[in-house]
Image (cartoon, rainbow, N blue to C red):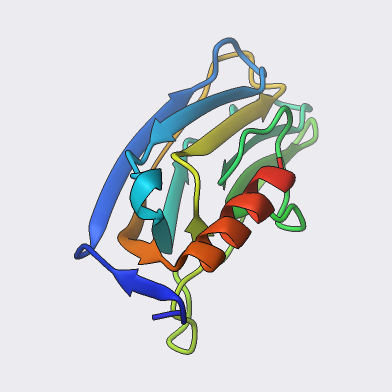
Length: 168
């Protein structure tokens, strides 16, 4: 447990799904954590799992599907260099007139044993983004966020909230 935090719940699993509003359109959904700011309550993320479908296979056309999970709202898909980004995933199909090859990348979704957590969310929501490229049909991302509620000391809570708000 990080210093200045006191765990107040057991493991919580939060499921979510976000569908593109139209094919190949950046779409974001928010998930309410129902944290109590009066008690300096935060959410300690210990794992994230993002599942995306496959991009369409179109002969001679490269297609892609990307998704991310962030602690603050975004207007475009982030990458892991974004301080608010908790997890990302990407599936790409590279195609020419003869053949197609699929590639998949994703961030560390569960920390190795030497890490206690992968992120801390200090504000009430987390956000999930999805966007396809050249698919022609709307795609979606679903997943789960694993963590627990904790109470932070006043100074730690203020620093966490300020850091999160400034990263938006």
